Image (cartoon, rainbow, N blue to C red; front, top):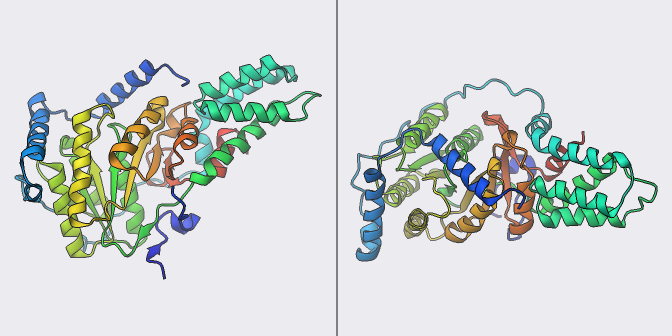
Length: 401
C-alpha cells in the first residue's frame, strides 16, 4: 500500500496525480514589487546587519569543508514557542460569509470586472469582425491571461459559427472553457507522504507575498487534521518574520524553532529537521527569507538551505512551494522562472487574488510552466486559503454564476 495519505487538500480533492507536474510594462512591475517589499519590512535591519551574515555564508561555502555546515549555529538556544503536547490553540477568526465559490468570485471581482467590461464594450456591436477580435485579444492580454491563451480564445471564436452575431455571454463562455482547459491539469492537492517523518515543506518567495501567513494557515489546517507540525523560522534576516511565525505557533499549538536575528538559516533548518526527525513530527514547514529573484547572493543562500537539508534526508525537501502575490502581475512570471531553477520548485500557492485586476497571471504561468497549483488565497482569514479548483476559478474569472 502506498505511504501517501490524503492531506489537507487531498481530503477535499483526492490524491495527487503521479504525472510530473506582457500586459503591463516591466518597469511598473518592478516598481510595484519594490513597494511591496518595503511595505512588509516592518522591522528593517541596518545595512551592516544584513550584509554580515551573507558575507560569512559566502566565505564558509568556499573555505569550509561540508561538515562545517553541520556545526551548531552560534545563536541563542533554539526553543519551541509552544510545546506540541499542549492543546491546539483556537484560531480567532470570524466565520466566513457565504460558501467558497461566493468568496472566490468576490475575490476575483476586480479581474472579472475588467474582463467583463472590456468584453461587453466590444460586443455591443454584436458583429464578429477582424477588428473586433483584435480588440478582444488586447483585453485578454491586458488581464495577464497570456498571449497563448488569448490567441486560443480568439481562434475558437473565429472558427465558431457566429455569422449572425455574438453576445458577450458567448465570449465569456469561451473564456471560461479555455481557462478551465489550461488550469485543470495543474489543479492538484498537496499530499503529505506518511512515510516521511517529517514531510519537509520548504516555503519560498519574495518579500510581501504572504509567505509567512500562508505557513500559519497551512499549520492550522494540518493541526485540525490531527497531524503534528513543526515550524522552522529560517527567515533570520527579519525579526518581524520570526515574531509572526511564533504568534502562529502560539495560536495553533505548534512548535516553532527559531534563532537570533542574523543567524545562519541553513544551520537553523538543519537543527529543526534533526529535531523533527527525533520527535517523529509529521510535517516540518520551513519559512525562508523573502528575496528578490534578481539578488544572486540571497538566491545562493536558498540553494545552500536545500543542500544542507539533504545531508540529513536526501529525499528532502519533499515539497518546495513558491508563494506568489497576484498583484505583481508579470513579475510573478519571472519569479517562477528563477525560483524553479534555483530552488527546484514543485508547486505554487497564489495569494492576494482579492486585491488585483491581474488574477489572470495564474493562467499564463500555468500555461508556461505546468507546475501544480495547490491552493489560492482571496483574503486574510484561515478559511480564505483553499485548495485550487480549476473549474471554479474559470467560472469566477469569467464572471459566470
